[in-house]
Amino acid sequence: MAVVKVPISHEISGHKAVRQALRDTGTYSSDLQGDADVREYRQLPLEVDPPRHHLFRTALAPYFVKPAIEKFIPEFEDLARKHITRFFAEGGDVVTNLALPLVMGNLGVIYNRPQDVQEWIEWGPDVWTAAGPIRSGDVLHGYLDRIYEEALEGKTADMWREIATLEIDGKVVSAEEFRGITGVLLAGGRDTVVKLLTGIVWHLGNSQRDFELLKNDSTLFDGAIDELLRFLSPLPAMARTTVPESTSKELPTDRYVQISFISANFDETVFENPFEIDILRSRNPHLSFGFGPHTCIGNHITEIEAKVFLKALLEVAGPWIISNKSEIRFYEGALSNVPAHFAQLIVDSSR
Ligand code: HEM
Image (cartoon, helix red, strand yellow):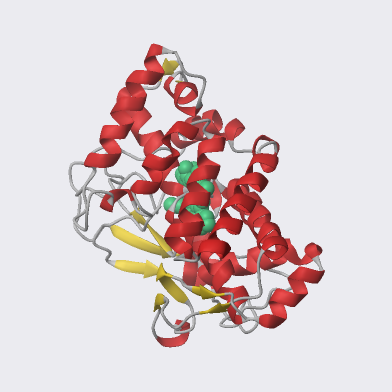
């Protein structure tokens, strides 16, 4: 899921203010049309406020709770070993040759759609630029229309069939709601998790100390993943509107507010030396998954996938260093050692 594209009038930053704003859905509403250049429907449950939000969230939650995702661990492990072994034998770019195919493979397992994995990989890390550099919804929407028809025929037993038959408030989801739910389920766990897995390879290529610490002690995995989630802040900010868009005809142009998760993650009043990666931090209340009613529904998928990946990486590969041919865009100012985007990450494991 990428930052929703809307013109922002002001930003809320800092750990406490961000948490307060995320809880205050009356003042800072999610009832907004994001990505209006490429879609006309709401991503659900992302772009709807309570109490309606709660209905979608409750209907989807059973598929994303920890025990539901843990049952896929053996398949995640097989995929991680397969992709890591191949990558370190053949080389290439971590983003496109390791993280993206692995993350899509895992989604294929969760949604029971292994037949679609290759197609999803071909879209690249961002669904809106699947057809080329100009943003467009054509590729994603063509796919969503196809799977909706298939799901209605009832011949498949997969996540799309489950969603097409969900009842929200006594009514089966509409075609538009189906698009809104499945669209965010394909976009949400894509560039974000790809950035996290790529960032794990980046950090362990830079820090021999953390490589050794983690190789010798798997009880440090959870803390390391939390710290990389904090530091990388894969979804740095999201928008809210001060005027819910579906309830008013008067929509002021300055209604959009940006809630900065990344500012919370680097708040010096909460995190000591926030600009350093410290995998041994004793307390890590990062807001990378947001906070309040819209807290990421894919948090368990992410944490479990990342842990399986880290374990397999340390068993199968390493040590490696980051090649100077890598293409990484960093933030500016105080965050200048924080990668904003990995366009390409090349590793050298020959020594
Ligand atoms: C590193 C990985 C991830 C990060 C950093 C991340 C981040 C976030 C954040 C910050 C939000 C809150 C947005 C807001 O308040 O407006 C969110 C919501 C959401 N995420 Fe994630 N996400 C990740 C992975 C995933 C995965 C794997 C999935 C599913 C496959 C997913 C699906 C969603 C959905 C459906 C929502 C909307 C929840 C709601 O509105 O109730 N995310 N995510």
